[in-house]
Image (spheres, rainbow, N blue to C red):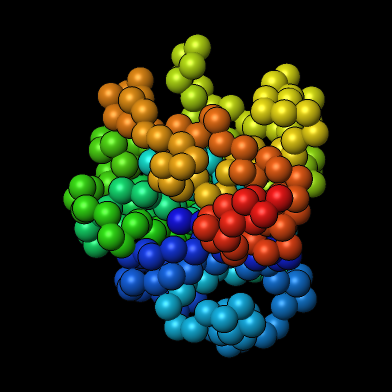
Length: 297
């Protein structure tokens, strides 16, 4: 899986088995899941708007798309072992209330698992997300469980063994999704409501060092800079290619929870200023392309 934000759109690219409650949703094999910001005065037909957006990026049919009026700089990305959750959130059009006259600030959640899931687990993940979302809103003091336009997309690696048959909160998969939404939804709302100010998407990692806890990574005032070499670029410290499984760049290592985790602490590929700039200009560039560029430097 590769993810990146280009202008007003979050893209997840790969070979996915996925389910979506968004525009033209369902269950399908797709190469792309996207979350796109529309203007506050948006009046276009949603399906047609997504089709034109996808076509401009060379994507036809095999995609799922979500729409929101929330800007992508308010996006929160949360990684918990093999699960990554992407959340944008706003609550201007709560369930059971009159809808906003402008494009609604909806709650959109995308869940990605690098481990395989059967179709029923994809669907059960949507239930788990919905329950966690309602709990998070309740904990924040809201008296509604969501908004009138909330949407969820769930994707897993199509070619991975289907090791997850269920996704309830007692399962390894469901417990991670539930925890990520509980943490991420309040963070996403805080950014959209400008109680927390960030100019770019926020990244959170579930860490077990020093006790289980969530850590927000920020490049500003990083105590480890420079962790590789003087003058390194840190735009991609939270790597959009993770886990790339390229053994020239890293290796699988034993995790403290008994499984394995991709270790790439020694990888300097995206810290090279030339390659970082190239990645900014060409966000869909393949790892092989970036490695060839490094060889020419």
